[in-house]
Structures are given as structure tokens and as C-alpha cells.
Length: 304
Image (tube, rainbow, N blue to C red; front, side, top):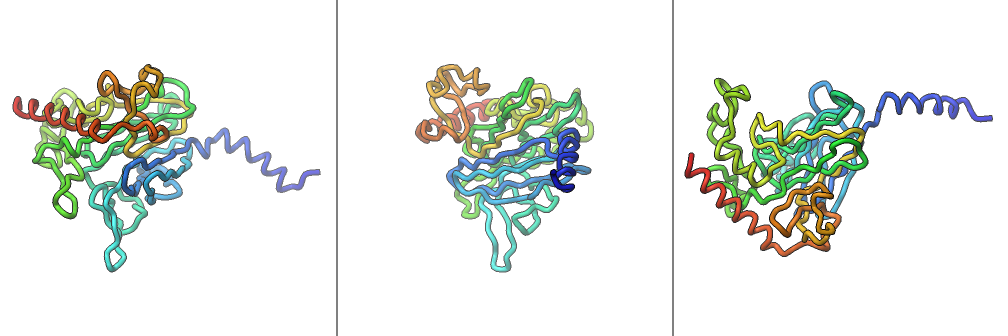
């Protein structure tokens, strides 16, 4: 005869599934050639996850579980360190907590953001990758096991290498560009910030700077009202979030990148996650993408 405690567990299990206490999982993979410190921020009124910041060494992965109807954002912090007093800080994506845990604080721009609302309208998850607050590293979001239009999204180009001079953020030694500001952050102009007289979809339009981001990363948010091509939905999925996803030959996807729901870079290259790192192309392929983005930026800014 089962014990009372075991009987109560069986009674509790259906409630857990019905209420969706654990709704989804997020698996973070660091495919960068350097350490990344992911940050986690739950939206107001949403329960925090088990951690608000952690360390991912090169090649490392970590999975977090999220409760039902969770809403929030993730990002990667780079070039982080502790000073002699033990205060923790990062050159990009810093949340200002002074610790690895962000403890309810968000990313200091510029930072590439992955944003989620689970079990929203119609029971769908809504998700996007946003460059509205600028860019600091490539990021890919891939739904796993869901139903519906579960598209891959992200920003995979090297926007740091292609960043216009006036938007650049330099590293601690001043020789390397480590992030790319949004035009709003750089200039504070309501036209770029979609604020004031420009605070509606009708008055706020893409700028030459946001178009640079959009051409390089077509599926990512490039400015505040970029919803139609940048918000995606899926039902009952788990999500893999990869920092610095690998570029591979089209042949590695069977010659059909559209079947894997991955955008073409050119006629022969597609982006995939870190699980196929063995097929990675030389670094000059990434550089060519940056040069293409630079050309786009220069042409657009001359027209501005």
C-alpha cells in the first residue's frame, strides 16, 4: 500500500501539469571564442528564474526552467572582471549590480537582447531578438519541440566590425570595437528614439542606422516599431539560445537551408548553432560579411 506522502505526490502532479508551473526550458550555449556571462531579467510581475546571471566558458551550456506565463529577457555580457574590492563589472551588457547575478537589473546598452513572453495570447509564446538597444555579440534563438510557426531568429553578423565610427564602443585597451550603439543612445534624437513627436508607428520610421542593422540581421528588431518582420510565435516549445553561432557550408544542411528555417547569407553559406562547429568555415567568411555590412552602412549614411 503506498504511503500517504506518495499518494499526495500523485495528487499534486496533475495540478503541476495543468497549472504549467514549469512551462519551458532555456538552454544557453556559448559558442564564442571567449567567456560570456548571460544576464536574466524577468518582467515586472513575473517570477524570477533560478538565477539572474551566470558564467559560460567557451563551449559550455546551461539550462534554466521557466514557470508558466513567464516574461523577460536574456543577453550576454562580455569582458567581465572583479576589481580589488570584489566588485564585478562588464565592458558590454553590464547590469550594474556589482555581482555576477543581476538581481533585477537590466543590461546597460548596447546589448543584443532575446525577449520572451511565454503562454501569451492564444496560448502562444512570443519571442524576438532585439537590436533596439544596440548590439554586442551574435545571438541565435531556436525553438525546440513546439508547434506552430516556430521560426529561428537572431542576429548572426559581426556588427562590431561593421559599426559606424560614431556608434562604436571600444574595449578596455581602446584598440578593439566591442559593441555598437543604437542611434538613439548615441545621439538622443527623438527621431531615432521613437519618442516625443515620433512615438507612433506612423511617425517613427527606419533610419539609415536602423537599416544597417536590418540589412545585416533581417529577422531582428532594428527599431521600436519593427514588429512585422521581427516577432515570432510558437506553442509549448523549449528554446536554445546560442551566443556566436557557427557559420557552415550549405552542404551541411543537405543543400536546403530553408528546411532548417535559417536565412541564407549568400548562395552557399547558412548560419547554424554550435552543434556543428566541426563544419565551421574560415574566419575570412565572417570578415566578408562585415565588409558587406560596412558597404551597406556607408551607402545608407551618405543618403541620409
